[in-house]
Image (cartoon, rainbow, N blue to C red; front, side, top):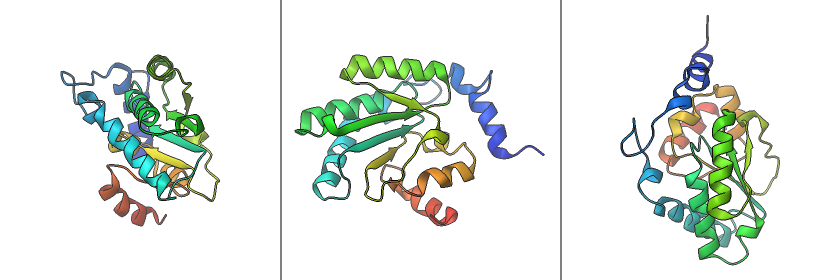
Amino acid sequence: MRSFGNYMQEWLYGKKGYYRKANIGQKGDFYTSVSLSKFFGGAMAFYIIKLLEEEKLFLPLKIVEIGSHHGHFLSDIANFLKALSVGVIEKCEFVSCEPLKELQNIQRTIFKQATQLDLISCALEELDFKEKKARSLSLTNCLTRSLARSLKTIKCFLSPMIIRAFGAVLMNPLKNFLKI
């Protein structure tokens, strides 16, 4: 029997998968806060700065977005970090977890044009977070897209990370369910 995780992976990312042809935005199939305004990224940048000031996050910092579509959210965060802080952006690394090579290329191009910085692209399984201090922040603008992967992979990925984002209400029960 085929697992739900494998079915969703194929449906979303396979040769005829949804995200190969998705029309996302105000006139598309759905839209998110990122589609409406750059200030969502600004709010997250402000939050990151607050966590750094409270020593709940530390530099150097890896900022990871899972399922970033075209990468505008990370670009917005980077630009606001640059505008709102001194010396933070230089110590940040931006990573996009995206299984589709076509979207990885689009994300890198958009990020470079918007920020003049390089974006690292990888698959979820390639992430490595072994730091004891909180030096990474995981973000997702579309939680359900991120959770389409198998729970085992998600558990391995989330366990060592600080989970702070708009999905916090969902993440606490998820953390309890996964026992992380």
